[in-house]
Each structure stands twice: as C-alpha cells, then as structure tokens.
Length: 270
Length: 84
Image 1 (cartoon, one colour):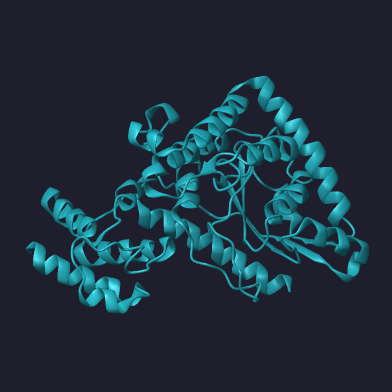
Image 2 (cartoon, helix red, strand yellow):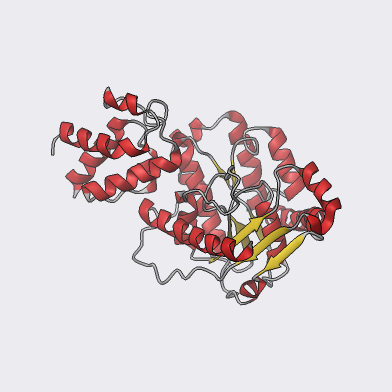
C-alpha cells in the first residue's frame, strides 16, 4: 500500500534533523502548489536545457530515440540510466525531453546528503533545477519511512501522463574504470515501478565526468570528447497485479531487469 | 527451529557477504551488520534475499529496514515463521 508523508511514523520524522525537516518542507510545499510546480518545471526545463546544451550538444552521440517516440501517452516515463556521473540523469532527460511528446513534470530523486541536509543544497536545487531533484532519499534506516513516502509520491505522479522522471536502478554511483560495469540494484527503484507501472526506459550514458569545470573544458574539445546516450525499448512489466510492491525480492527483480537492459545498451553503444 | 539454530543459519548466510569474517567468529545477537560485520546496504539486500530463500519467508522493504543487527535478522525469521 502506498505511504503518504502524513502517514510516515513519527519516529522517522523525529530521526530527521531540523535542517532536513525544513528543506523537505520547502520542497514539498513547492511540489504541492500548482504555481510552485509550474514555476519549477518551467525553470528547470529552461535552465537545465540551456546548461546541458551549452556543455554537451556538440558532443552528444544519441541512439535509440525511436523507442521514446513510441511510448504510450497514458502514463509517465521513468528513465533508468547507469550511474557514473552526477550529470547522467540530466543529460538523458534533456535528450528524452525532445522526443517524448507532452511533458509537464520533472523529477529526479536524489540522495539527501548535501541536497536536503543543508540550506545551501536546497538553494542549489531550487535555483539550478527548479527543485526537480525531489523526492529525497534518506539512507539511514530510521529515516526510511520518509523516503518511502517520497517514493510513493513519485509513483503517484508517474501514474499521470506528462511526468518524466529519472532514477538510477543502482542507487549509488559506480566508481570503477569500466563504464559497462554495473552495481547491484537497490529496492527503491523497483518500489516506484511496481506502484506506478510507468514506461520504464533503460538508458546507457557514457563520457561524462563529475565536474562541471571538466565538462566545460571538454565542451571546447567538441566531438573529441563524445557523450554517448543510448535509449532502449521500454521494459515489459506485464499485469503485475499479484505482485506486492513492498516485497523486497520483487523490487530487486525489477531493478535487475532494468540493469540487464542497460547492459545490453552498453554493449551496443560502445 | 529455536533461536540458536536460526542464529547458526543466519551466520552461514552472512559469511559470503561480511568483509570482517573475524567478527563472525564471536558473533552475538547484538552484533551490528553494518559496523561490525562491514556489510554494506547493497550486500544487506542479498542477505535478506538469502534469508527468504533459506527460511521460505517473504520480507518487505519496511521489515528489511529494521534489520540492523544479527538479532534483528533472527527475530524477523522467528516472527515470520511464527506468523506463517
């Protein structure tokens, strides 16, 4: 059963720091208000598009966009890229945005560290992405009911047409040298998919660093520093009415399937 | 199965995932999975799935979040088997 923020146990709320509660309240307020949502979406599409285009458009090698054009219009879209850079979700979403038809909501769940445990993180989130880095993922076990409520909010949004979200099935960033090496899946991704049944699109992204300055330098190198973005066909989820979205095994299985799709794309994209 | 037997089985499940095998030798119900056995969150998922397979129980994400010590795992198994 889906969990609302209001229903998260008090012990989870009290486990959050004062700053975490405050930043989450601001972000929730923005996403609950129709004006806030509209402003955030407009701002994020303008600024993220401008920034990604400036830093990467000359370097992009994009494959598989035909899969995006064929997605059903009656539900949201969840991009499932590999996770090697802080920027891979934004680049994948920027490219997808031009191919998915109508889109009026953007979400990129993000770990709470920095983004939600400091006011500086919230300021950057709001000013640079229109607070699209939402909901926060709180990792410590006592706070995870709040995380689940956030994920369930995202699932509710993904049931609506016009929602575009990006979430890493791996949960954390791969730090190895092999761009094709993927980490094991985590449960959060599967929970969202099982609750929302969105169009889940595996994406392989390669060629991005973790530094904005490095990306600016590479932008000057143009096509000598390519960024590969390969979209795959959406996962076939089936009916799934008998599957419990809170079951850990079912969640992990969904994550594994998405990562298998990414691994296939990695082979074809290199 | 009593608590001792379940504990022994849990230790067997934990062995391949612990980066501190020496801590498993003196493992008690209070031993922390993360801090003492050095099992990270990704590996903890595998531990929970191993428990599901071994004991024929189903664990939800909420129940898995409450497993922070060896004793929590043992308690989860005993309660789930009792409820079955």
